[in-house]
Structure formats: structure tokens, C-alpha cells
Amino acid sequence: MKKNYLNPLKEWFGYTRRERRSSFILLFIIAAVAGVRFIVPDRQMTIEIIPLGDTISFAEGNPVKSDITPPQKAQTGKIVKPARILDINKCESAALESLPGLGPVLSARIVRYRNLLGGYADVSQLKEVYGLPEETWDLVSGRLKADPDDVRKININLADYRQLIRLPYFERYEVTAILKYRELKGKIEGIEELVENGIISEDKVQKVKFYLDFTE
Image (tube, rainbow, N blue to C red; front, side, top):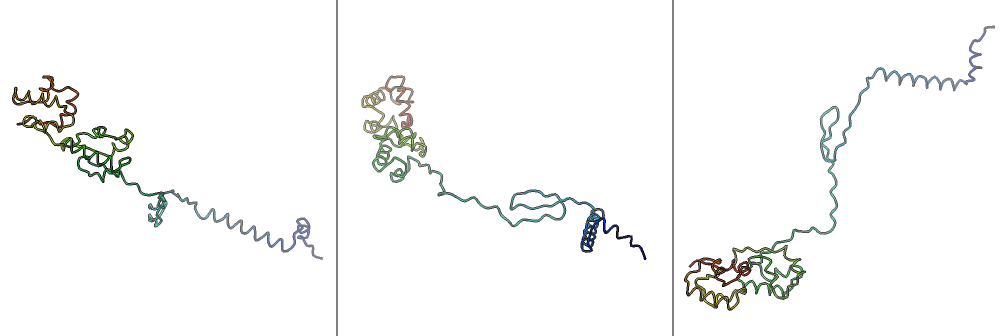
């Protein structure tokens, strides 16, 4: 009787025919994968994180332009336009009413005082408008501008009493003194001459200097 040498192995491992077939297939797959690792060289790919919408570039190959555009941020609320600066010497009272704290009454007073002065040389003169609160001045001052070149000047060497007294900064006695001095002296050369002769004060100069013309 021929001796079967496989019987001890079968008894040792205790495998059935189906289990031996499955083990053989598993070993074949492991060997095939290991062989591929040795046959195919190891290659690395570099991935660069870039913003959406830019050109995508890989380690190899040509750059590819992405068609994906980044999402736009959602707008909340209304679009706020920059505040418009008003020229206080040129705007109408209706435009002034658009400013915070200025109703029809105050806007009309601002325009009337502008006409009385002959124009605003500086926005700070708004503080002289009757009834204008300090808090309203704080709100509107940054949205107004005034050019001293726009004011209407008074020729001090030709003006009469009525024209000089029209300027709110002059007192009656100062106008009278100016006219008498001009009658005695003749032409007044400059505002410093009025100060030196005690006709007007240094403080008054800062208010009236933009409104006086000393040419003939």
C-alpha cells in the first residue's frame, strides 16, 4: 500500500480543501502586491493649497485654470454713501435741512446771517447764528465747508456809514471812528493802522479782516 505523505500535514493544520484554496489565493494576492512595489517606482505628487478662482498647478503637467469663483460675502444692510460736504456759502436752506439737527427755522437763519455777513469766512461762524445749539454745531460742522475768498468785501476807503455798519462785527462807535479817521488821514493803508490808532481791538481784527478791502 502506497504511503500518503500529505496526511500528517493535513492532520497538523486541520485545513479543509476549501480553506486551503482560500489561503492559496490570499498568498497569491499578497505576493502580487509586493511585486508591484518593486516593479513600479515610487512617485510623489505635491498638492498645493490655493485660493479658489486661481490657477491650479500640480507637480507635473500643465497648469489648469479653475472655473470655481470664491463666494462673495453677503451684504448686510444698505450701502452707506459718503456724507456730502456742503458749501455753506453756496447751498440753499433746503440743503441745510438735510443735516442732523437743522430744521427749516435754523436753516433759514443760517442763510439770513450769511447774507448779513456777506458770506462765511469759516464754518465756526455758525456758532454766532441765533438759537443754534452747541450739540447741533458738533453734528454738522464736519459736513460743511466755507471759503473766505467767497465773502463779499467792503472797501473801507470808499464805504459810507450804512455800508460799514452792515457788518455785524462793527459797533456804531467803531464805524464813526473809522469815518472820522479816514476824513482826517485820508486813505487807510491796512487793518494794522486801525489797531495802532485804537479804532478797533486786536480781537476785532480776527473777525473783520476777511471782510475789509483797503484798495481805493
